[in-house]
Length: 349
Image (cartoon, rainbow, N blue to C red; front, side, top):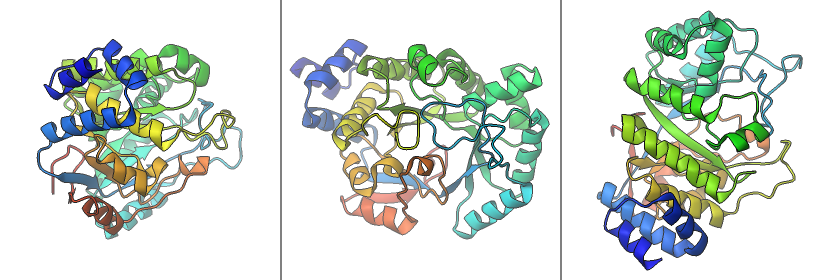
C-alpha cells in the first residue's frame, strides 16, 4: 500500500492491478488523501467550478428499455411524449432568465423520429444563442441506425446543425458483460468509445461518465476507467469525468441496495487517482446530496457540476435534490474554496 501511495504522490501512473489493490485494501482516508494530493497538483488554486445550464430531455419514449432506467416510456405507452419546439423554446428562455447559457440535451431512443428532426431541433435551439451539449453516444448510434448513415456523417451533420459538445451519458460501465445484462439494446462499449473518438477528431470536446453500484464488479469499474484513460491518451478530448452512483428505485434493479456515501467517495477518489490525464472530476450532488458533494471536494473533485434547473432522469428514480447557484457558492465557500462559473470546456467566467 505504501508503495502505491508513494507512487501516486510522486505523480506516477498506477496500473489497473494497483488500482484494484488500492480500492480493496486502502481505507477511505488513504484514497481521500491521495486523491486530494492529485487534485491539488492539477489545480493548485482552491477554485471549484460550476455551470448554470438546463437538462432538457426532448423525449422519454425509448426502445432501449434499460433495466436501470426509471425514466423511459415504451413506444406504445400513451403517456410518452416529445417536446414541441415551442416547449423547447420556453425552457431555454426560462434558463436564460436565470443567467444560463448552456443546454444539456438528451432523450430516449425514439423509434419513429427521423434524423432530420434532430437537425431541425439543433438549428431551432441555435437561434437562442446557447451552447448545446447534447446527444450521448447511444443516441448518435441510434441516429446512424435509423438513418442508414455512418457515425462519422451523423456527427458531422449534427455539428453543422449546431451541436457544440457531447455529454458522457450512456457509458454506464464500459464492459459488455454488464451492458448485455442490463441494457442489451444499447450501443456496445466499443461503439460508445468510437463515437467519442470520432467526435474528438471533429474538434468537439466531450465528457465521460460512469454509473456504478449495480451489477458490475470492482474489476469492471477499473476496466471502465482504463478504457477512458486509454482514449484520453489518444485524443485528449475529454474535459471531465463524472462518476455517479446508480439509483435503484422504480427500476428493474430496485432490489439492489443503494450505494453508500463511503463507497461513492472511495470510487470518486479512485477515479481522480487513476485518470491522471483527465483534468476535471465532478462531484455528484444530484445523487448524493449537498453535504456529501461538499465532502467530495476533499476526495478529488474540483467541479460542482450544474445548477440543474431541470433534471428528470434521476428524479424518476425517486431522488430529487435541488441546488441554486447561491447554495452551490455557499457550500463551496463553506470548505474554504472559491466558487467560479465556467463554460463546458472549463474556461472560467
